[in-house]
Length: 250
Picture (tube, rainbow, N blue to C red):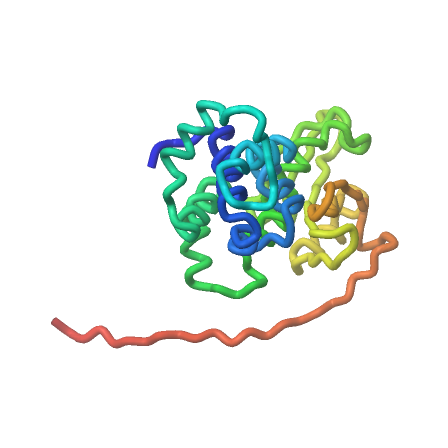
């Protein structure tokens, strides 16, 4: 598999959504096209409208209810990708989209094969994680609270927040990013995130990206555990299954 550019990933996403239509949406875990455009494109740090245009580019080629860009020939670079990937089955094409768009890459596919629970769907993971984080990276420079701060992604460090905001003349700020599909909904903070928020107080920000189903926007909560938000402490107990064997002497 060759390395794909961001534009090629967007084009292939548009091809998948055009060819497999609503069945393809469900395969990826999305409830509608707007949600798919927003989550997939923002995960690639691209414009959702660009992805919609690529879907419309391919619509005249497939028996879906949309006409698309039927008044002109398909562009050459789109036609070339359709010739290269268009014969993939829906399952193989969906795996390609997941692999190319998710930061986890092929690990994403293995995790889904090991855990097929709906709560762990590809779409939900994008919205609550990657797409929301890329949205934040795209807009943080416009947020008054973060003016003149530089950004460091700390998602892989396990420190209890997603981004460290630094400025020479002040202590760092911590930002935890969450995403929700609609304009209202529940979010969860881990025990560590909640504890760090308590320790940092006004230096901790909860950045919630809302309404992926239509048009994303954000709300910021400074010192969230001491804000108008009310957090309920909840505990969960899970049952783990282990497989045991004995290694004998040789």
